[in-house]
Image (cartoon, rainbow, N blue to C red):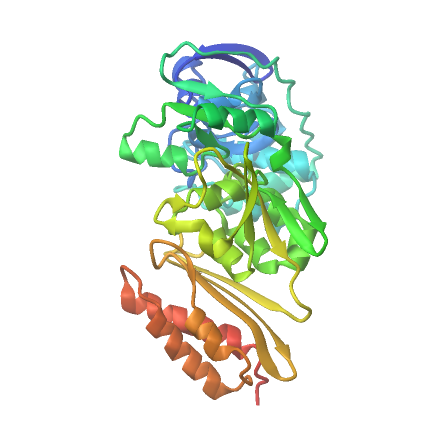
Length: 450
């Protein structure tokens, strides 16, 4: 396929397969080697660029999704070869050594200062959390960003994008670009093998690691406004399947009604990943380690599946039928997730365990919800992920706790029961012990210290 997009304000036209990585196009076709190849999985940030003004990892962006978009790379910050003020701040603070990771750090800092010209140290740390540097230590980098902000560093708006233009030239490998939900559904009706693609944050690493050619037909979902929106309707929170985890994490409505979902959104990779990864993709990819499914299970959510035949709502516990399998038919799209407003007094807890404190694929995800009525637990929901092929609720434990009075004996029994119910495929004793302890931590929050 042949398509056009803007790079640092100039329109370029390139040719390649739809799922070729933007990273490779920038480096190999356009000679913009300031963008580096690091992990290839969105964990290191060495390949960070700005896409329509938003920080993304170019190793996770398929070529067909940049048609008619605007891309900014490190080279665009110094078009005449003279470093701009942010780059000079990095040099002045000694925040550059080998330089391999520096372009990604600078692009992440630029994205932050465009959105927040006067960030606090905590906000800087969060913005750079998805960027690894193995030789400088982070303190000089933080000081460089603070210094640029204090000096009044200004970031211009993103350069304009060119007119959307795509020509498919590769027989048998076709990309579709629907601009409305009915158009997308018609494409699926005619081409049930077409794979809907949103953030591609799981798709591209899977293809890269496995060395696979990828699907023959792909369909871009990022242009569908019908998949957007965060709103409350008749006591139900409706989340568009195309909403990113960045938007979910920033939503006051999500944070207020369902804090566990807000915490989950903030744990899905760094900023560059959160800007691309979508709720619908996390649900439909059906990874055993996906973060949002246990949350949706614990909150009694429902998925809205739409086809040309009509709409159906599927309870979360019926959405995942097997490892990497869902209840979605080939002609359907997940358009939204619905979560009923919690009963007054409901408490939630989101626990994610990994080999390090942040930016990890979980080894255990545990989500709990319950409330207290007349001194007894009610509405108990406990869901787990990353311990079985599909996420599931610990229904036997929920039944045990329902109607019990919060006291230490009940917590001890619940902890033991949780350990018995957890049957991880690997690291069994470790995950069972930790799972039981996390259940105990949640339940103990109702017991006043003596």
